[in-house]
Image 1 (cartoon, rainbow, N blue to C red):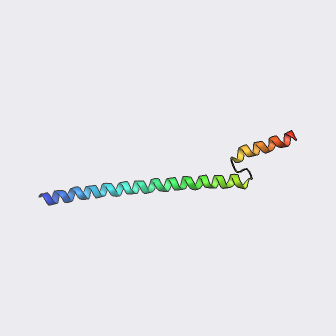
Image 2 (cartoon, one colour):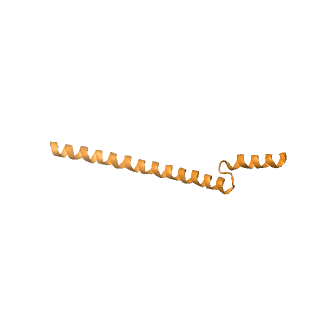
Image 3 (cartoon, rainbow, N blue to C red):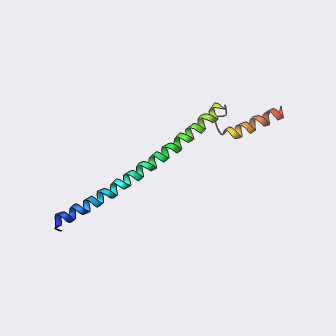
Amino acid sequence: MNEVEMQTERLVMHTDKVEMQTAEAEMHVAKLNAHERGRNADRATSYAHGQGGNADSGGRNARRQTKCT
């Protein structure tokens, strides 16, 4: 195997490694995007319940207010 063939082989191996890292990064980005969509859905649910924060604590606060009045 001459020098050009060895360099070509190293380049092919490096390209394969970069392609694998790119695929892993794309999967990670997709996972983060899915997580963020879930967080946004949780915020929208909380807001729709009229609390603007955590729906559960808002519900507890609403119950406390009804008991106190």
